[in-house]
Image (tube, rainbow, N blue to C red; front, side):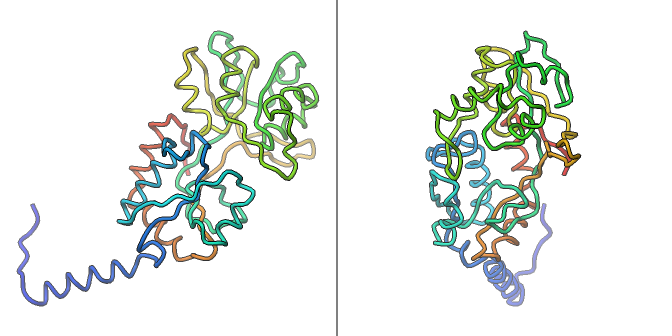
Length: 279
């Protein structure tokens, strides 16, 4: 029950002034729409049918700001900075805090890379230190240009798995170009025993692990991987929203949404099955 409010002229003036200030607090670009940059066919993150978990998070943000969500559907992330500079979109729903293309909000979740295996194979591996990973007969699938690729190089297994890299990339080079590899492909290859294990970013793997008709294990990789020179190769990462450098005022608006609607956003991530770490 709310306390009774005396409806004096000053009260209504205060209400009107408060509403006006609230509208002014929203960035100018957010007054009409939230313009989101998203992959056209990048499930489980997003697609043009809005079936990705980042599409759901964008909907929460739009509702919180009381604006519609408009999408610019990219097919090549290498052109995203130019697209943002051209005003095609203003917000990335999920990116790295050090992404040089954008301004970063505060982190709104943290997760890690996972090892995916078939349960019936009873492969108990949680770290890149495990001796299994150095055996040439043990097939490990990782995404191109990922920490997994760096680790295969460190343990001298990249050449052993080179055939698999070329296979999932459709025999195309990723040098200075974007080659889309569906994360579901690696999960399917574990399921079909083409691989013993795959290492994937947990948010890209969780949906497919849960949907598998063959029971799979998904375990977070320990964050202790290093190069031969001792330099750390992180396995756990925080995730932020990225904002166009042309619209820095959006950062505060999105940070406010993260604060006020964090529980709702976290519920989306948990429903997706993403393992969450403390921020």
